[in-house]
Image (cartoon, rainbow, N blue to C red; front, side, top):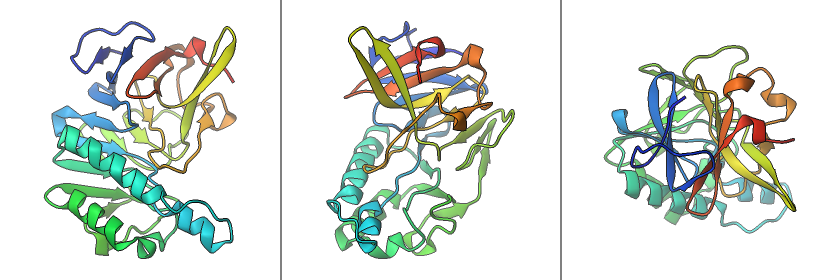
Length: 242
């Protein structure tokens, strides 16, 4: 698996950089520090698990949390779209936290989302939380999408799936450093497939040493790109702990 920084220079293990390129099924993808992927050859930005309106979903069930997750998530997404200026955005499912979450969008949040969609191709991949993305918001819904050597879907399928780009599992990587452990959301790949971290503001993470990841990656080629504050860190699989 080839690795390079945003300037496409070789990056040693754990060197800090705002983004790192990884090669998945022969395609060069840029892992951005904010948790999205930019595919330069296709001018495509990829995000996963926005979980918009998760806060209001909890409120409906009597679990009150600050109702600012959608605004925070869209603000961060707008910043990365402004940075990369993609012609296409693929959202890998669970874009909304429940099937009617889009109905709870505030007028301001809807305006922001409309402005992000306008003028570019926007693909809503169906997720388990949002099996039918709302047509009223614009964009195109799809169960999965094939582009070049890559297949975009929400849930990773078991067994070998060359070129699969998925979300759903909200991966996080943990490393042990002398006096403390560090755990961060991450991209995880073995050069054959990749799983993206959740982009949503109110979403947690699942350690990639959890049984849910068993059989998805080659241990010999496993690596993770951990998210930091304005930086990413490439960590070899042998350094990732449960």
